[in-house]
Image 1 (cartoon, helix red, strand yellow):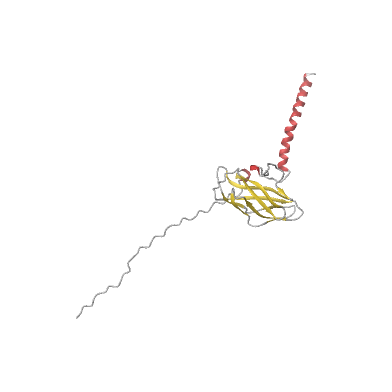
Image 2 (spheres, rainbow, N blue to C red):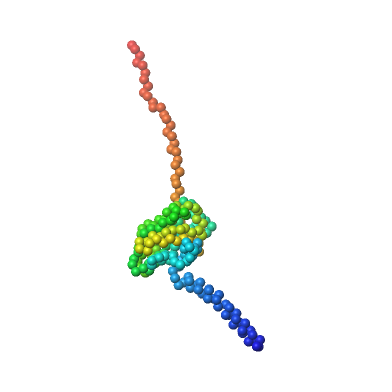
Length: 207
């Protein structure tokens, strides 16, 4: 074999060896562009048994779910609240409704859903102004909160929802509401007791 043929054989072998890596890169890229975005931080797509088989059921798919945390390096204090962002697609043949979101009470006290969210067939729906309330611990970003989404027809879907720091593509979202400071009660100045003046009585001299 000539030196030229030998170099060509080495080049072909190197290219063939690189194909699996190139395929893996392509698969990872396509995975983010061929379906609705769902953040995977904090295991949002991980089921309780460690699998990633689904993030919905009976035709209802939660394509995006995250809690907006503080700015990078900050925190949301315990007792506060944080916005909950949801995107839901109903692939079932009949409409459905998200009637509520509840927590197990470990990370947050309650979840506010201002009104039921109607889910028309084959349409993307969002849940405006939803929020987790009564944080049990300060939120820094990177945590996860276990929530159960209640649907009229699809039933209950329980999943771990990530807390995403308000940075990068999330930096333009409105920040978490600041808790309203409780007004401090101030003692009113006590009124100084004053003696009520009485008419001066003088004894009439006897004549």
